[in-house]
Image (cartoon, rainbow, N blue to C red):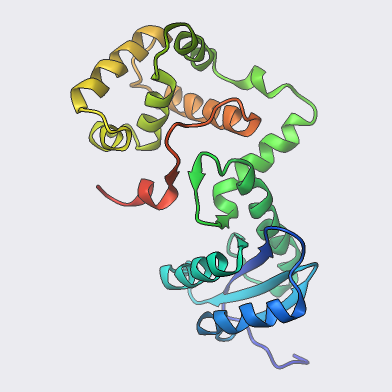
Length: 243
């Protein structure tokens, strides 16, 4: 009320942070000028070495492709990492969602060797990494890794095969063999042959949603621990874009 600011019903916290050091007031002013097309009815401030922005949206809308495109372009031009919180609805909660945006950068960077987000990290995509980090403080995370995946890792090491990579891309592409084969630069028949080998090695046929979930989660454990790096680093947008 004091500053006569009336936010819309959906808010996002966005943090733009240099990949090294802290952003200077002069650099923050330069970045702010580049962001002006998306700063309509927004609050922004220099805080703890980063430019922090509260984006406004109506009726539960997403940040949007245009705004994310501007953020990506500005991030690339200024060597910044960008964290985006989940949506929220009251400025009272601004600190919680500011923390989400900063955590998105922290935890997204940890597994960026697997998925290329072009420097834009959404908390919704990396909340699981924070969960693993907190769980890992008290437990050996490998004990939560599905034994079938560890068996497949041992098989690859012993036979010089790439079944772990094959299964990862298959899962990443929602078990779509055409998309997975294209991603791996394989003929579809070669992919189907490898999937047969995988089924024999792990001991089940990849038809259960529960099994697929546990395998996918186990991959996230290995990625977080740095025990597995995919041969192909793909952009998240490529996974979501129809092929």
